[in-house]
Length: 242
Image 1: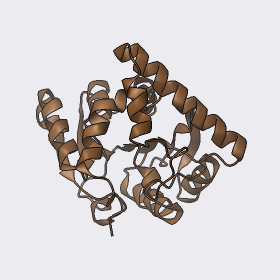
Image 2: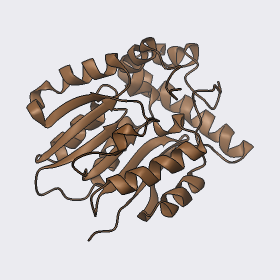
Image 3: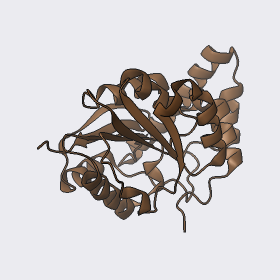
């Protein structure tokens, strides 16, 4: 059964419309992810897991002009929008429909230089994350990187309250700055988007320290958290080179 079974195409449409407001410092997160990938001096492939409308893929294509990015998602709406929005990159961007939990995509004919993901891994439970980290480590070419931008679970009541408050404040501030009004903030609550305020079975964020330990156990080196705000973090590691 798919971990993304409760994600509907209406959710995709909502995120396409409001994602810039719902995600704290979205542009900063994408820049951090791109800055952490190894230099790509020859044609190589990057996998963008659950690429959504292609915003992170676009950032990577601009940062690495020799790379090809495979935008992978379960949502046909997301893949259609991504293909349209990134058409200017030609055959350097292609889409692939997949289920994050399915292990079939984790064996490929060409080892990617990097695997990235934004706001997707938290849909896997703890064992699912550990399996993903092990499989991606095996999949990557030597020197390749896994970088994740995602929700992480605060470990105590104070941390949870702070993450909830900071996320609310971020959405409100970004919404007013972007639209001059509070509609994005109102929709954020109407859609019950925050798992820190409206828990549901689809969202299974894990503490960041646990995930760093799982990455290390999977074989990654230089494991670290590189950015964090309002319960969102950018973290990952690299596979040892030859």
